[in-house]
Image (cartoon, rainbow, N blue to C red; front, side, top):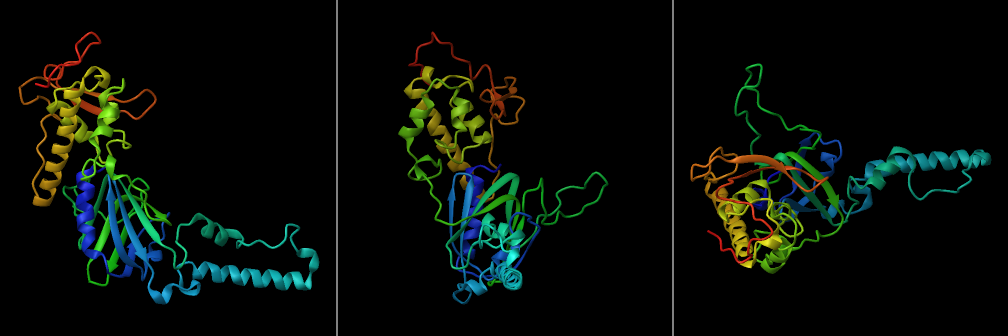
Length: 336
């Protein structure tokens, strides 16, 4: 999935739409009804690590329950309740032994309970998690970069990729946003985030990160732990380890503080450079990720690494530039 720098670029693209109203919707999400965004106002955006949060508020005229996005299913529920009460009045034996339910029955009740659509007047935040090729496009749709297997140059349309919902929002300012390959969910309270773990936040806590890296676990496992390095993904992991000349499977407890500090420095520096390049429209240069040789001309090793029973990620490293430490090596080894 996109890493912290790219998600922050998405946040930058969405921010100009804050203060505008959704006037038209599209997309084919089966889990999130695109029409539920109709007439809502985008009021705020936040970013944390690999997640984007968008706050939508209703228009004052739609705060009432009758005009809320749930009004239609509720009206259907009211009609069912009236029909049921009429039947009970004419036939007392038809009453449920459990009494009247406070939640509409049938599919309408399930829709209310799922929370796919926020209740009228409630604070609502849309949490956006991006898939492997997730992206946001502004005022245009994704265009074909090459011909398909049949030789057709057909543009991809906003639809579900790997069953991940896609959403299109047209705003009152005449622009629109198209979300590709995203997982979306409503939150009914402000997102609780910890900027101290975000590698691109000014409040990133180096001490907390160093403490996590200093454990006996291989450092390549800890780097991908979003509790300590939110926004850090596979590219940053590979590049930071190579620049710090650290083998991916080296236990942090064997590295010593100077090398761990150097590793954190490279994580922050590479991420910041990547983000700067995104804003400038330049390609981020990688030294080891997806390379066959390192800058020194050595053969690169590629292997899937991850904790036992956990997710395995492709990892590139140079055995000569990143030698693996043994338990009897001194911890005070300085980075080269």
